[in-house]
Amino acid sequence: MSESPITGYGDDLTVFGTRIGDLSPEEHENIEKEHGGFNYKPLENVVVSHVQDSSTLICRKPSQNNVEKYIEEELLDGLCCYSAVNQGQLNKTIVDAVVAHLTKEKLPTVPRSIRHKYMSAFLLTISNFTGMDRVIPKVAGVEAPDLMFKIARRWGYNVKKIEKNKAIIVGATGNFHGRSMTAISLSDDPDSRKDFGPFLPGVELVPFNDIDALETLFVKKGDSIAAFMAEPIQGEAGVIVPNDDYWPKVRELCDKYNILLALDEVQTGYGRTGEHFAHQLYNITPDLMGCGKAAGGGILPISFVAGKDEVIKTLTPGSEGSTFGGYPLASVVGVYAVKTIIDQNLAQNARIRGAQLMQHYLELKEEFPDKIKEVRGKGLLTAFEMHHHEHLDGHKVSVELLKRGVYAKETHHSTVRIAPALTIEAWQIDDLAEAIRDVVSDL
Ligand SMILES: Cc1ncc(COP(=O)(O)O)c(C=O)c1O
Image 1 (cartoon, rainbow, N blue to C red):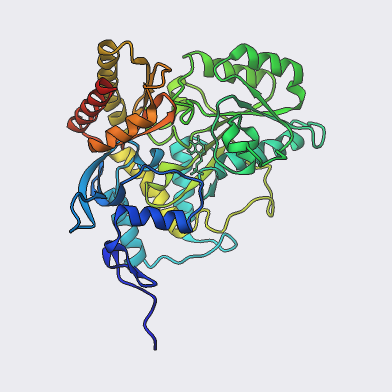
Image 2: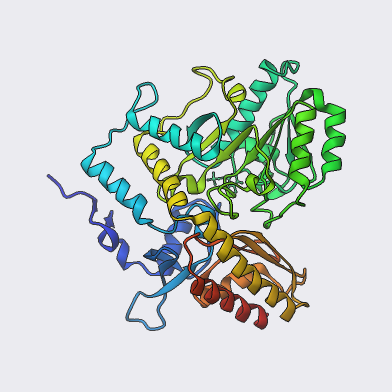
């Protein structure tokens, strides 16, 4: 038998003649440029290798001599995979559960057309955790808002009795719900929409955090509107936190006009903002909610839509499905992702460490009022926005932070989001803030 073209693990992983551990950062970049798409522009001269602790990665950077291919350095993870790793990198509880279930319990892989015992564990866990009646498991984060969109339309026709094919879904300006056709049909970001039309019909946008604009639209077109779908706090837009009374007023309006409130908690859920879900900050309950990212504990892509009985039950067999949504391994990981958030008090840690980080931000703003325009956040979903000058460049901040061993990324020209794992410790927050201060003072 001829030798396999793919052998080994880790650095010894050798694929079609190339040993991964032999590649320099530049060679990794060249492979991506030659064989990847051009849909991302990652930070240059850095390649993540492995995990050191729940908030620290080991990365490879170019070596200054010609002997080694790279040097290895610690990188404090200020982004935790855009809030997919709230539980910390390689959370032991979740990893142990995965290993035990795969090796001892011998998890099968089966589709939804046959029942498996872990689905019950997943449904019981998520319905209790969210306080919702029913749950539909999916895979990628974007599938949650996609499915909410579908369910809202169906509820609109079957329950609200909107005229066929006339249902409207209202979104908020500046939203980010992912990259599918549904998500970009709701988006007003020119980069994500360019040359992808025609877009889905039946979509209207209102300015985020503007209750009057929403009411005006509801008065005008309320009979045809099935849902208002939005993020409770806008993440990708640069951590835009609405007024305290915004969501309670939205809830009232939705009730008054018989319109579903569908919240995209993909980024804000699972303890990120200091509550298990951001809508709890505002004491409201949505009719539908979508989660992703940390729902998979940073280990697997897992998402779901949870909602009220009368809304979710408009789905019928054949109307919705997913081969890997809620398959046994995803169900187990989904259960342990929640267990970790609850047992390790991660929402509370987000509140405490978030307050610590915010204190640093306020000091930064006081020290550099000519550079820092605004600081924002709830829990550990935070951002600082600089004044809009050419030299106050968020990308430059990311690059300089990287040199100081911190991974963070701008969301817009002048805004930098910091959202570390909820397991982060006090000294790591101080280190992070010190690095930010150094970089901002040099701008
Ligand atoms: C609010 C929100 N919804 C949906 C998504 C899409 O998630 P994914 O990239 O996992 O598909 C994101 C990703 O950042 C998000 O922030």
